[in-house]
Structure formats: structure tokens, C-alpha cells
Length: 261
Ligand code: HEM
Image (tube, rainbow, N blue to C red):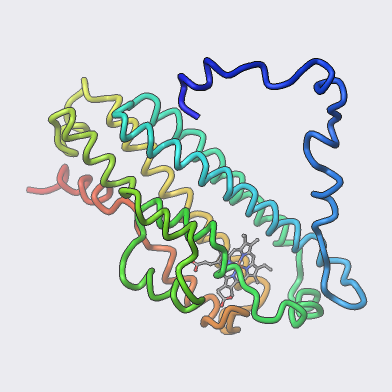
């Protein structure tokens, strides 16, 4: 919804409707709390935690994607401060989803081994929303596309993310609109708003890399460094390689310019 639409929005409900709304009905809790369907038999006491951390992560991925879409709009509108506000929220969300991994650090290897077999070939690597976040953020290279295709056709949500310019591209367009270079926004004090936005985008990248790092630590802590994943990869050896991937290579490269000669 645009800001204009939001301002002209009618009061959403009649008083009667609002009266009937309860905490539970508003949040669809009856449905939500029935969605944790364990598959181990007899039910393993740790499977509920395993499901909830994944489901909660997917809910946070959903809102991250939503916010990234908003960020794309703000960057397209060349709204620097709006984009800065938006990235600050995205960064808070990434920190939350990363923090959740710690709940699974309490899952010891022998207990995970007791129900891992029930998971079959299902794997986090099939997370469509995770791939859409990566694609929106700028991962579009051939390797990325190949990995995606291993799981069949590229899902519509990801394909849609491919239709939008990358965040790095949009940020560069913003610099062109201001007639400045990446180097200038760091060198010139009056360019501070653009510099703050650049730093916030970098923080997003760092936060995402932190998720990848803590996830691979978690994986090694639970299944060890040499066990293959349920998704068919080499497990931690595959995941280690993803930690150094960059959404905004130019934002990292520009720093070395201040240390040359
Ligand atoms: C017991 C805890 C966990 C274990 C043992 C685990 C294991 C793995 C392994 C081995 C992979 C590599 C792909 C494969 O072959 O399966 C993977 C990928 C992935 N997992 Fe997990 N994982 C755990 C928790 C989580 C959680 C809580 C999430 C949150 C949604 C998650 C999301 C992902 C994603 C998005 C990938 C793809 C990463 C990429 O390709 O860069 N995992 N996981």
C-alpha cells in the first residue's frame, strides 16, 4: 500500500465487527497452533522445537521479504531516508531470525539422530522464501540458478524476485541521481545520509552472513562436519562456502580505495 492509499484508507471495520474480534480470532490462533505436525513415531519430544524454529523462521522470512519489497519501492522513489528507515527494520528482523538458531543449539546429536530419518529428503535448502530473499538481495549468478534448478523449476516467488533490479543496482541508481560516486559518499561529509544508507545495507549483508555462519556452526554441532544433508549436499562443507557470498561486492570493494598508495 502506498502512503497515499494508507492515508485515504477507510476505517477497516464496523464497531460491531471489532467487538467480535478476539485475540485468538484476529491472529487465527486455532489454525496456527494446529500447524505443528510431528512425523516421528512415537512422537519425539524434541521434534516440536525443531518444527517451531523452522516455522517461525519462515514467518520472519515472510516479513523480511515484505520489507525488502518496500525497500525496493523506496529506492526506486529515490527516498534515501525512507530506505534507511526500512533497512534498519530489515536488519532488526535478520537479527531476530538469527537469534532463533540458538534454541536448536540445545538439541544434542544423539537426540536429533533419533528423529532425523523421519524427515526424509526435506531440507532447508528447499526454502523458497530464503531463495527469494537471496534473489532480491542480489544473488543471481549462474551457480545460484543451478542450485535452484536442482530442486525443479524456479519457484514463482523467486522468479518474481528476479524481475526486480538488485538492491546494489538500485543503490547505484540512487548515487547517479545524486551525481556522486560510492567513494565520494564516504569522503564528503555532506553525503552522510547516503553513507548511512550504504552502511545499513552493509549491516544487512553482515547480518545475513551471520545467519549463515551460525547455521553452519549449528549444523556441525549437531550432525558433525562430514555428514551429508537431507537435501543431498555435502552438509557443512557445502554451507561453509556460502558464508563468504556477497550481495553488495562494490560496497566492500570501495573501502580498499582509502588504503591505496
Ligand atoms: C537441527 C538443525 C539444522 C540442521 C542439522 C540443518 C542442516 C542443514 C544442512 C545439512 C543443509 C545443507 C543442505 C542439505 O543438504 O540439506 C541446510 C541448509 C539450509 N538450512 Fe538448515 N539445518 C538446521 C536448521 C535450520 C533452521 C532452523 C533453518 C531456518 C529456516 C534452516 C534453513 C536452512 C536453509 C535456508 C538452508 C539452505 C542454505 C543455503 O543453501 O545457503 N536450517 N541445513
